[in-house]
Length: 110
Image (cartoon, rainbow, N blue to C red):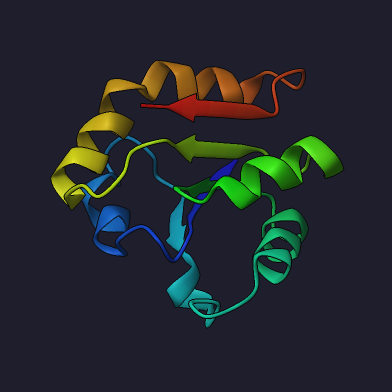
């Protein structure tokens, strides 16, 4: 499974976290930086991505629509790229469980 970073997260995370998650992408790479949440959702669904976001809307979509795609919601206000990177690094095991467990569709990180 691959991770797709939403526009509210830095594209720098793709290279910074490549050692932990080899299949990372950012919506910017696909021309989706200004796309609607629904379009990003559908892109992730069609291309087997897990969405990584700070946007509560994707959490709501996951509750209404189910998965795929699975969603990782980072519940942190304004923070640096380093802080987001550290959050994701600190939860590598939790993310791996999300990736491999078909019964888990959503992961909330703080």
